[in-house]
Image 1 (tube, helix red, strand yellow):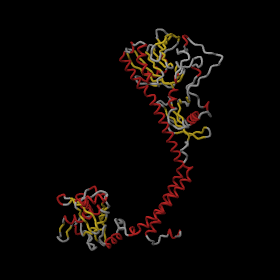
Image 2 (tube, rainbow, N blue to C red):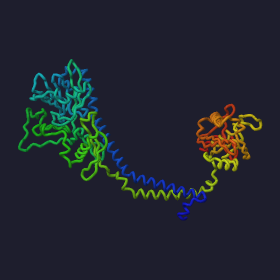
Image 3 (cartoon, one colour):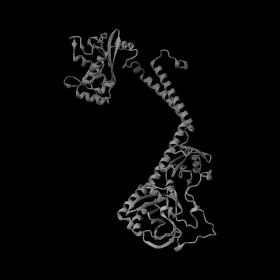
Image 4 (tube, rainbow, N blue to C red):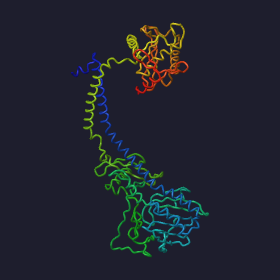
Length: 571
């Protein structure tokens, strides 16, 4: 077959024309899909990367919130417990008994503080495997009392230290007052007792005529350690950042010169009251002689570290873009393109932020553009297979396609279809009825006339569909529906609809279409019926139901047992 003959539109066997159309359809569809896919590959890659970084950032923020949320809940529980116990009368030992179980079971909490409006304070924090209690009596300004406890909470030793300290000036105390009875969170600041940055959840309330403040500390090191456990990717990272783009990478102590050995304070403890050499997990105590408050910075300027880790490059790109609270930032680090997204940890955009960086193309998720040869090969295989299958189908069913009955009428140009149907005569998919309701023998409307053509509709629905032509005699003579005496076409359509709802049910209206046509000056009615997936019963006199099927040019009513068997076999 030549190319010209393949596309020739002259009269050809239906098998050849259908095969040609199927091949053209497959080629057009696959070619269009391939063209669209090729054009959208870049956009798809960008969308996938944007969705990945956005989802990762939101996941990281929610995980951090879930990590710190227990502090807020436990703060409320501890406040209620202290209120019921009468915190204003509790001794430091009794306060320790109340708060120590909370710190034991929530590793996030680095320390617990309780202060009053007079400047009195109780402070419990971890000291390695032991505990340290610090109390401040406003009647003894400039001094604090420290008690070292063992792992069970039993006191080991107590001593006093000089310390010019007013808890009412600390960020956590200020945050509690500003929150006005709600849990308030500080911005990141440096804990005086540890020389480590962190955040604090604080809550104020009235008790015994005085304002009390209860607070729990959380180290940024612990938050950062938690972020490193999140399942981002082998190359992705999550980090903490302040509103100015400063990045926190963990504690970076400045070692003291070897010629300046540390000198222990009273009772062999550091200046904050911690026994020298006592450490523990992420709450290691750093000797003040090795690292003072001025030797640590919670956040490191991105500009000063540009060219280092990609998190600093991400922060620079974020600031250059105007610190957007949503969306993604593309930046380059180490000759690779990265994506970064940033979200504030709280409703305060001037507080802490979380950032996530991911490579624009992750290993194992290569750009689709690199796979176009495979896509092209698969497309060609599909086209060839589809053409072969189409050829087999057309060859096998060519006779059936040639003799395929007409089950619908062209509603724009119906004359040709109507003449074709009437000339063919009644068969398994076509039935003629002289009128819709008028009995030509008695000269009056009769219910039996209506039920006669409704039986044909029911049979077609239960078999393979078909058409009932109203206004045509059994021999094909055009009679028209004028004998039915309808005032207009709308009255005729309404009567048909009412009969269908009454005797079959409105649920089958979607499978039946009724149209009126004018042929040789006579009005004809055509009822087009689709095959129903559920059995259809005709309700006749006294609500008796009949199940009918179409066999050849006849409607056959089946008994109950035969109807059940037919329905089961029909599926």
